[in-house]
Length: 100
Image (tube, rainbow, N blue to C red; front, side, top):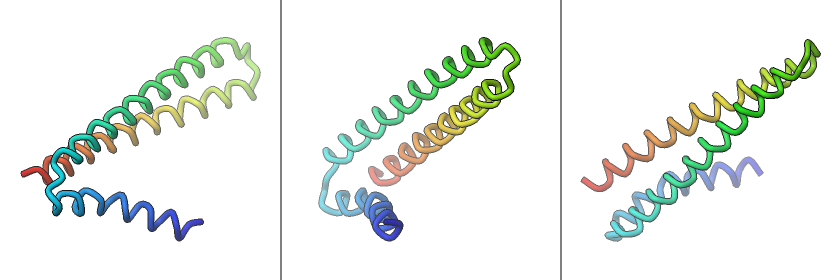
């Protein structure tokens, strides 16, 4: 499983170079749009998780298990937002470098 995952990631990283070498500006535009949509979905899901965690935290009534669960959800939502922001910046930079 891990070996196939590494191959898949390598393929995704090399795909823009392969397409660009074949003159695929239109394809690169579609890939950029798809990446943008996926990143927006991640942002929306993360915000929904933050709201859910806030409600869970507010209604915990001192229950340590619910407070811990809410804190973990907040932590993972913030990490998700950070990863999505980094992915967006990386995608913009790669697209900009390939279309020069």
